[in-house]
Length: 244
Ligand SMILES: Cc1cc2nc3c(=O)[nH]c(=O)nc-3n(C[C@H](O)[C@H](O)[C@H](O)COP(=O)(O)OP(=O)(O)OC[C@H]3O[C@@H](n4cnc5c(N)ncnc54)[C@H](O)[C@@H]3O)c2cc1C
Image (cartoon, rainbow, N blue to C red; front, side, top):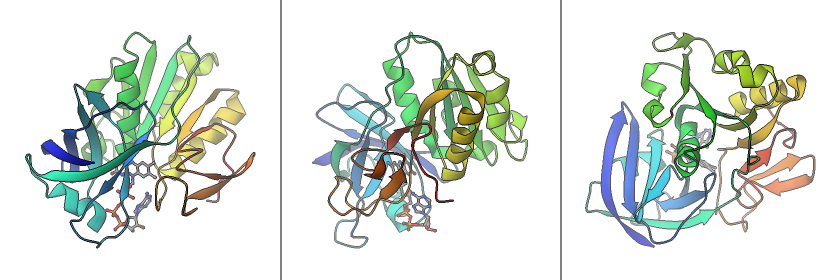
């Protein structure tokens, strides 16, 4: 679908929030594939987590790291972008209890969407990043705990520090929903196993086609080899066999 861009703002240095027209719906945890160039360089679309859909407008949040994200960063309102989706599995926490949302960097995007769709749920968000510049959209959550590695905002250190101090983590009633860098997800998975909590992790690894054909994003799980784009990107804690 050729979607008209409503806005594309640099929300923090190097981080962009793009809003574009989108007819249809999606569920929190799912992603879309953006064709970033007019021609075929780069050839592959880039997956982007859905950060929200309201009134026919979808938003994504991205960090310009390479060519595939530098090109959409140059788009302006009124331009068009080629979008396909939504794809992938969804967050499905139990109906009751506290949800502990853990986001690293741009991993906050699908958690923001989940919060918007579940405004009456008891939830606490834990947002981490290298520095203050890497903490995004913290005002989108009612209870938020921030950690930065250099101490420029919130607690100094990793996001797992405030997480394990939270009452719903300590009494094991909290259910984890996490998205962020692989190292952070692996650490949360190991903590959840050690401390007896359950939850779901959304992986943001490299991906080829986005709809299950190329097998470029296959990962090992306790249930065998799974495609991150079809059976994932959301997996249960304890399910992924980490390669790092
Ligand atoms: C399900 C899913 C959802 C995603 N959601 C978002 C999102 O909401 N916002 C966002 O900014 N990005 C997201 N990504 C990652 C995004 O699709 C791109 O891979 C990434 O932004 C880099 O693209 P690029 O073309 O700019 O970089 P490239 O030119 O492809 O690479 C530049 C550098 O970044 C490294 N790199 C590229 N992609 C990744 C990756 N996924 N993990 C680790 N290192 C990488 C490369 O090795 C290289 O060093 C998501 C990925 C998946 C699979």
